[in-house]
Length: 82
Image (cartoon, rainbow, N blue to C red; front, top):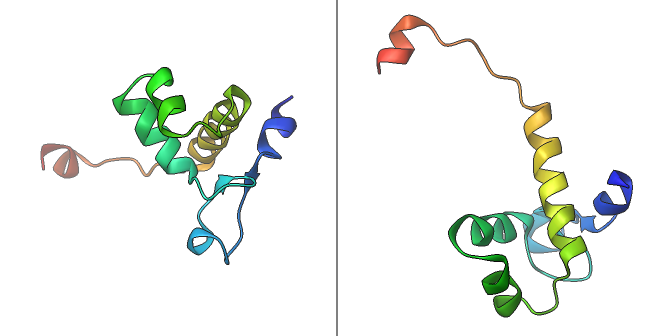
């Protein structure tokens, strides 16, 4: 199922400077995530009526996978105080 969602995301250097977008649109994944963080799902669909719930799930799956790949460096006590 996860691969189905990820197939809905496209990365093409010719589209939106290579940012990941919902396939078939020029809607960046980061835009969908920002909208969700600030508003409701209903507001998101009103702003982008071409999106489906599967597209939103694809964006969330893409973001989760990106976070899973992140490597966090341990913070030193000095960095923690800054």
